[in-house]
Image 1 (cartoon, helix red, strand yellow):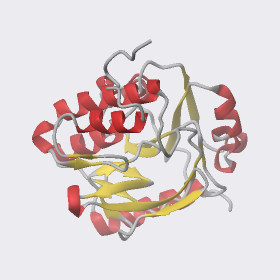
Image 2: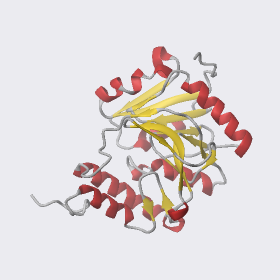
Image 3: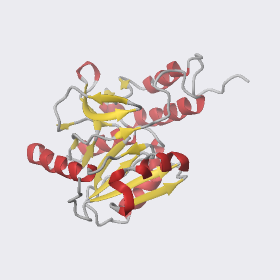
Image 4: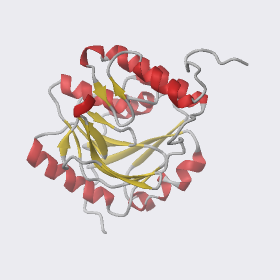
Amino acid sequence: MTSCVDDDEFLFLACVSRWEVARERLLTSPCLQAGKRPLWLRWNASSAAEAFNDVMDASPPQRWVVWLHQDVVLPEGWDTLFSQAIAQAEQRLGRLSIVGAYGVIGAGVQARHAGHVLDRGHVLRGPAELPSLVDSLDELLVAVRSDSGLRMDPALGWDFYATDLVLQAQDAGQQAAAVDAFCEHWSDTPSQPPLPRATAQRIAHSGTAFEAKWESHLPVTTTCVAIQQRGDVRAMAQSLLGDGVDPLEKAAP
């Protein structure tokens, strides 16, 4: 499919912690081959916010900054389909400030997944109709309108920052949505316990900061965890370790 998206539509942004992953996944994306779309890569950033906020503060000419993981693959023509999906969503839902590929509507027992992605070889298709306004988005791919005024929170490190953006937008009277923007996600994080201790610790730290920041908005359900009260993310991370040790406490030698 030939792209018909204006050059000022999307700027793609990813942080790279492992070049071999980026070369095998993101940089093989047909949508991004041969410089078809502007792509900024940030090596070894201290947080997602460090890279994202620098780009947003520079006032990019593109209407949308598309944040995506280094292990995401965008198929041929994805940019055209995404542009069309955003336009259709805004016709139905109104002006959007954040658009993602996969998210959650509602929280707790009322939560419903919305989106369509290939995650680690398994097709995920949420039951909610697309496009849909959402209350949480997965970090694998999220587009933010460059004039929205939204910024990522460095205190969240590498987790919960997309849902944080959604909640920021809602507090500012803006909207977030999931659209049909099928892509591939090849995370090497285990889908079943045990998780590496460093990963569990990272999630627990970020979750603790997120819970404290948005305590008045709880419950919040993300694609990975249902948060009813402070401490829920830490407990989830501990359960995923498989050894019963609190991830925020030093493990025995």
